[in-house]
Image (tube, rainbow, N blue to C red; front, top):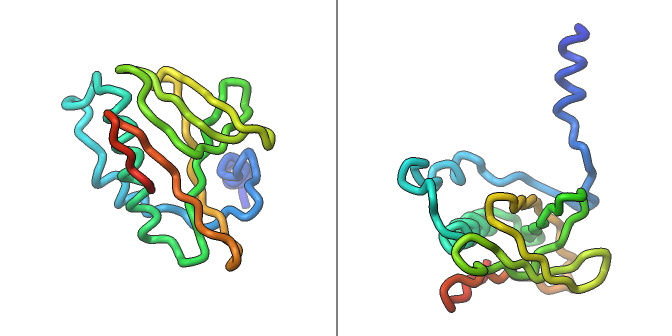
Length: 143
């Protein structure tokens, strides 16, 4: 293996590990539903949340019976919030209810700086799968 190949392998390794993480979404399916950039350049946080809900619903359909999606809001300091629900907060901000360091929390961010990490985890047979709530314009979408 050349030094260039070794360097590429190093770059492809994940920077963080997620115990229990499984599977990957079908990126082709996600990309097929992405809007044309020119048509959505200045879209609202509500549209962002609706598209995110749709993507998670599509992703969940492809998961095994013992898997569920998990979403993390990544904070600027590198910490993360496990998302229980996410909604629009005005035209350009999102509000997240979730869990950080085993404590319930509320996180509000402008959509331009909002980062989400999605992965799957195994669900123990005796536990119920958890849904993620998406709130837009008074409507709740569960995914």
